Image (cartoon, rainbow, N blue to C red; front, side, top):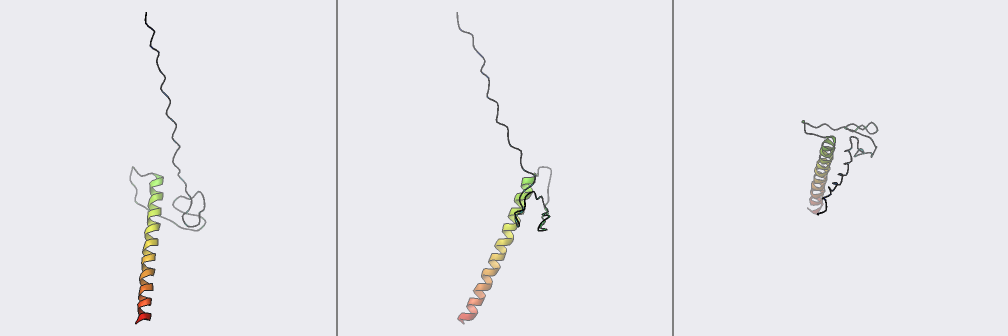
Length: 89
């Protein structure tokens, strides 16, 4: 006589942590900001669709801030180069 097969219980999947809906402000680091920071007054607008999530909008805001910072850095570098050329001539 053979031994009965026992059913193995599958391990339960680990519960996923829910994504945040409020984030820290990029400029003043104030907690619980959405697209408007009530402390420093910074705002961000973005086009959304039915698949957009709050974290997607926050990452768009970060990308927009990086783009502005890079543009400002390039402009400052160009101005410094122009000023250096004026002194060299």
